[in-house]
Picture (cartoon, helix red, strand yellow):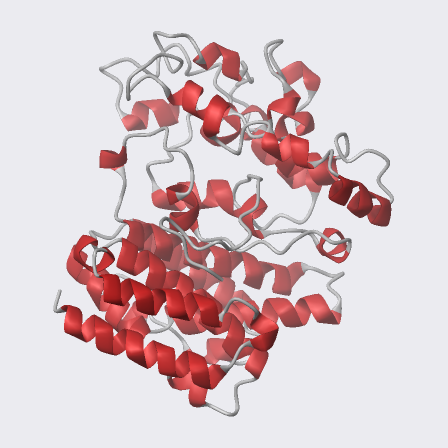
Length: 397
């Protein structure tokens, strides 16, 4: 796997969703119309109502959000278009779906407005738009006219029904389900595996928000990985139709993420302590609650560069499992994959290290080691991880 300038080329999906823990299209539809079902009367007004040149459809850097989304963002139209491909047709055949562009098992993520009752959609909505403005920011009828008021605070906007995407925990929950979870039947039908990594996915997205308002990339990474672990452990805890193959895959991913997050939790007293029992089998309820607590706590941390460097040092020194013969090769491979994702985002988040050619070369070698998980060689990876650690020490930053 070759690392590119922005983010590793794992198969990022083209979908969206919310507070994970979703294994039914009913819940998917509920969230996308969440404000409506909460009883506040919100409805979807349509993205065209965000596109005026005096609002988000203008020029410059502060009023071009709609333009950038509609022209460059893969969330616009591409998710729906994916449902018209030959691959989607083969998957639909396996699932006995006659039309993937109209079935909620597909459209809940690829065209989420289709899951919203017609009475709650304004006449300007287009379900073929894929993931539209209000799917992320929440149905806008109650706040669209007021959210630009200079005297309105973030709390005012949230009170009116706008989703607080500045909050990393909320942001991670807004993205994770469609970027992480696929129900077991759809996975067996041939859906590609999804790997959720919030910081890399945001970096790879055409930015339509103020970069200055962003939290540090390593903090975004940690919140995203904790949220991803919550989703995997939730599926292990609740899914009744997981095949043994899929369960084994989720078990490997869960253990890999646990091993990545274990040393991080020792670095700040505000983070919930890690329980070594989590690495034993069938502790998914504890893992699910702990990882959710970790995501919340990490989102609220003050995050200096020194903490990013501590995280990087901790992961660089976390190579013991690759010499442990009691850990299976598939678990080692999945752990290595998640570990490399973390090292990449931590290096990228520290400008002096990102400019270090030698250190970046070491990261690229590690990406190469996890290019093919079935061919993963623990010894080679351990040696390359040691080299990365030496290069990191020499960086002196």
